[in-house]
Length: 341
Image (cartoon, rainbow, N blue to C red):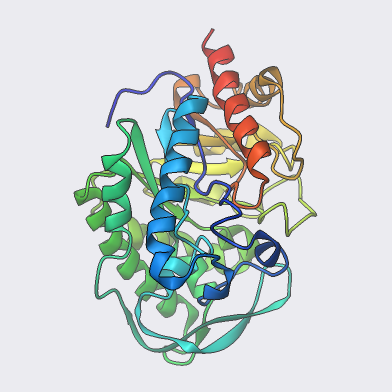
């Protein structure tokens, strides 16, 4: 992995998709899709892959121009953070979806598990190769976590939620191995439902997560959030599931602090982990001052050593207007530079 400065800066995962790529009004007018949602794309099917490549180049360039140290592909090829991978697995019927409650309690169409869940092919390896070909900076690729995918599915096969999650964990583990082999520096497992479903998470969440992490030799991260600010507006001031991740074998833990005004004292319970510290408020389109970003980071310094902090956005930037997203990237990178000084 390329050398990183103190307080390296990074997106959590997604960047704002251009209006010419995706129908942002339709995207904002519904809950994040769990099944395929091809109607969201503006280009004709025969031009879609080319358009997604072009949008990915723009996302990479925006991160580099802003000065970010760790670069993602912006998740430009995805309708949501999870459905891109979850709908590519065997044993899942996406043409005849089931139903599950979203974290807001709203019923949402979801993949229906009808047989053993298996990954039969790499899903994001080409995305890693494209990212590596177009940046020399440290790279990160995100993938939905197994606990979250199990919560976003209707199980008509296993009859046991932990068994479903463990099958997803094996699929995710195989994918992560291939992503590292393709040259990515960091693989991040997005697990917002560890926060949204704390009772089940406390029963088997870490066990399932550790199966997904088993044997991985690259840098691994786990992201927990309260949901996209554009959709979930009420934010608790603390996580319902977080200290438990001290037992997870991941290297890094990604959390939100800006929108929730999180009491950072909880981070003392995650000693030994690098904290990807969310300090960019995605509920407010106004661009922060770099000094504001630096102050938000400083709240964590009594509990986390400076060398164990990555400065980041609270969650994905998918729903932000592009101008706001560009400004917030600059504020993020400039805030990190202030801290280094």
